[in-house]
Length: 59
Image (cartoon, rainbow, N blue to C red):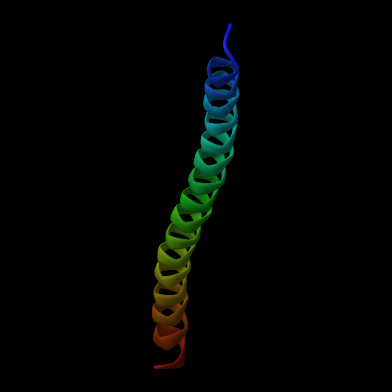
């Protein structure tokens, strides 16, 4: 086995490990962002429901 072949194999292994980490981080960030969007939508719905309930009692 030539020295260039060993470096190529090591480069591929390192590239796969780095890609694995990057994809893992990106997917976690996407999951957190999606979760925040869902939480914001639910919070808005709850806010408007509560506002409508309290405004009926005051009127």
